[in-house]
Amino acid sequence: MSVFSVTHAQRIDDYAVVQTLEPTDVGTGQVVTIASVAGFNGAVTVQAVPVHLYLGVNDEGDWLFDPEIILPNQLLFYSAGADVAREAVIPAGTLTWDPVCTWASDQDVLDWLGIDPATANDEAFVTVATNAANAFAYRRRREAGYFDQLTTVPGPDVLLGTIQYGATLYRERGSTDSFSSFDGMGQAPPFGSMGQINKLLGIGRSQVA
Image (tube, rainbow, N blue to C red; front, top):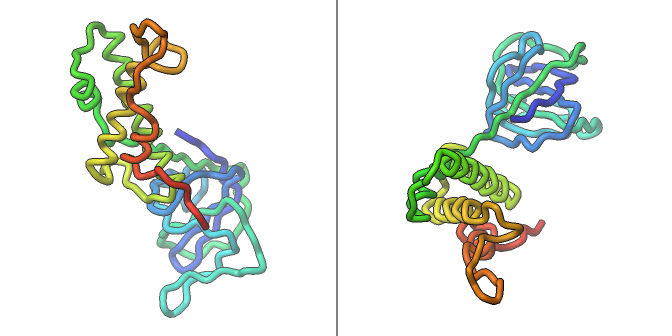
């Protein structure tokens, strides 16, 4: 969960824009919760991340912005109500973002490993590994330019990549940088290579402008 400070807010033509003190990774389609900002509080879906001053909506329904005024860290969303001129929020409000990805389950990882947890600690660590894999897969795909839903896996390849990474994390428990091996030369055999996982997640190539 990430909590950001809301420093400014405005509403024109039933669309609101809030500005945060800190940069966020929130993008279009994400749900955030605003609090302590009178008239804007509640859970909202971000529709745009503008970098200029919002001016309103034209006759065609398009958003208008002033290209001469740059305002960083803004989020735009639908908000029915009377127009509110842009003004500082004093004291600052909050914007909470809790991007919990649930693509793979604990049982998915256990099925891949082919084991049952021996102790409660083992079961708890499976949950930690699964949650970490979900967060990693979602974040890496977002960094690669994909737009995904947190509760709906994009495809079976992404699901397998997420499960495989979770299993890798579980197998690496208690080791320095890879899972334990009984190989006489002390070198672990290939397992859960990041190259294969990246391919499954669809992030095997760099994004270009």
